[in-house]
Image 1 (cartoon, rainbow, N blue to C red):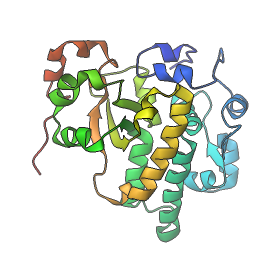
Image 2: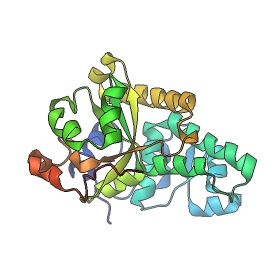
Image 3: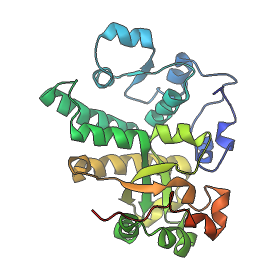
Image 4: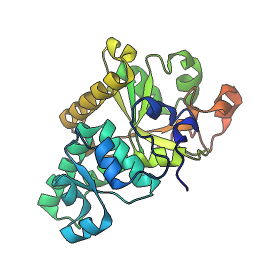
Length: 257
């Protein structure tokens, strides 16, 4: 897909980025531009494939040295760079978890914990709420009418979703019924929900990193809760019609295990 400077105007999933990222390139941003516009305050910088090949190591090992392999003119890696800019503390934590397992088991062996970390890294969604159990219970039970219809007025007010997975942002360039995030519920203080976007984002990153580390979330099987993104009120025009939620292939009932 070609570069689109106005990508944040495509839909409400991408729209929040307009207030948060300093990207205004008429063409694909070069790595030099990404490093200048995004990496200044970060603990990493972005490198090309040739530099990565010279290192002779695995991706996570390069990141541990502050170098993030980033393909040019590639939406997936472009959004990956944006997530580093928006969630630097959380990204550092996730790579540290990879490195702990690599030290114990080697880089070639993918442990279950590394798979869970990668899943969140690619497809993660953070739900910031004042009371975690209030929303976690219907999420676990796949109570989609309860989440999206009965509590509709709370979305965007004190139930605020934030995309973490860069693959989700890439898919949001052309949304489709089936687009699903794997979410972490994060309790935040009431004042959080009225902060300016940039301040709120920094607070979110700090709190998310702390929560993931203290909870050891990825040590547990199936720690992430599925959430159909196009069901979020305000994120997709078709969900203004309650009949949209009758699609059981998308809004799937909970399976009995």
